[in-house]
Image (tube, one colour):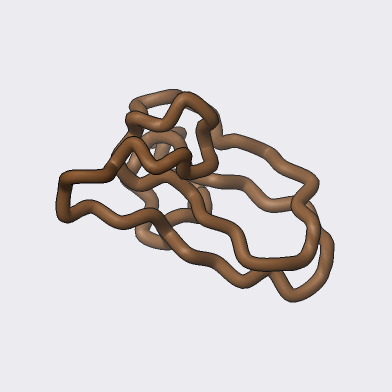
Length: 73
């Protein structure tokens, strides 16, 4: 994951989402396959209904891939 100070705030649509775990994607916070050849896999998340989500960008959340405010500490 990247080490940014604020989460990605996204008005997400319903459906299956793949959020980057390796931090190498050129389309953060979404996975673009940059992890290929490693053992790292993206976060697979089912969004049941359209909603706003905060995706962690510091990598320290205890609720990955979602932000829990850890970056503020």
